[in-house]
Image (cartoon, rainbow, N blue to C red; front, side):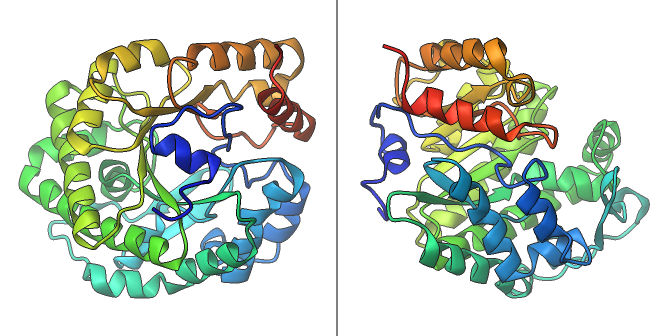
Length: 346
């Protein structure tokens, strides 16, 4: 396994490492002034993601400020539908917008092999980061989970998922075919990230919440199992972190059992002890500080950090937030968080 001696990779292999390794979802972002300056150089957000030099620089910026154990590639989960031929644009203050599939009678997509060819700039960005990244730090590649990406494609935006779920029921055959397509394209995309230098991978299933068990099994677990089977068939042995955000505890346990992921990311409200009890195998857990701590700082940050460290002390742990860092986070609070983790109180 590439990078097996790195702290984060040792945790993914099942070891308890102290102090625990730490990285932060969205650690490259608008709370950093250097990121805002860099972002201004690109005409659009997708142009930014597809510019290897800019994407690599954004990936590396937070590691120049903070003693983080990992870099995560700067990109976006919607590069996949964009590469499959669906028009993706980002509207300031509103988020991503696509042409909704639910308004179309017949769905047409490009082949996954052609799609990943279009994503060549992303893999070049991985190569650039790999060349500059210190040996002790892990490089994380990522993609969106099939259901999360499908949701954006079906209804053309985020927000409430009622329209996407309605389509999943009314056009079950079409939606299941879409999920299979996304699993295949995503497997190829992740395999190429590993080929370019990523040590491990994370799958962001951001819209896993509020699903019935039947829907969760069909829309989240089944496509993820397909994705990971294809990834292994492509010869990729890199460990995978699954992040079925805000799924019910028993659903998380079934996800872990069915997919065989090396680690599970937990959102802010999940209980590490409860999840460890439900999962019937040793597994690393990642999480789950409230992102508000990066805004409020002070006693709230210190108390919540100590709580997370105590809650996850029962096994392998990667420290992270329960969701991405927000644009109003304060740099001094991020620095204080890293200090608390690297130098825990006796």
